[in-house]
Image 1 (cartoon, rainbow, N blue to C red):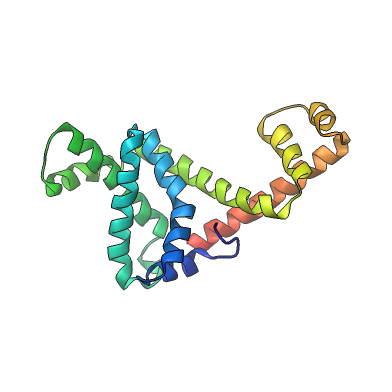
Image 2: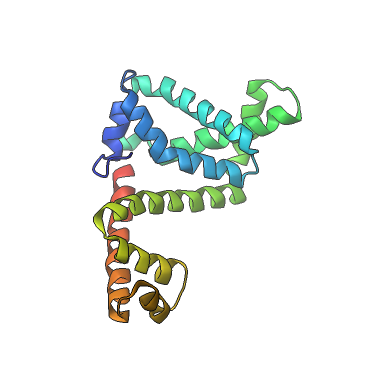
Length: 196
């Protein structure tokens, strides 16, 4: 499971060490859902999503050997996006006809700036941060507060319905929502700041 206190930079530095298998496991737990979800949204068949994950991880493992974090060289987020988009479109092009890898890369360059692809990536990136933050919320808050938040803030049930279902008063529902939203906001802001 992802350690709630593992920073993005620390994780990348650990992944750069070829023999740190725990770091790769944590990396896959952290970024795997993002990669898989983006691939699904780009209409990749479920049987091919694992291939895309493997492609991205192989490229990363090669490039991470010389890794040294330098935010002036760009954001990891942008690099990961490029790798994922290329892997998705390589898989798409391979299905249509056998082509050379160089031809695929040339065809992908305009695609990666496609507004629809960009919008999907941005939405998946936001959801990625929400998922990461919710893992920490699950550790920090009791089940009753989490359920109140889920029913009221996420599912859109009324405060009274939520309170009745959980056997609490409406004020407790409002407080749970407020506390968790505030904490979610802090966690997401912290994640984004870490990633540069």
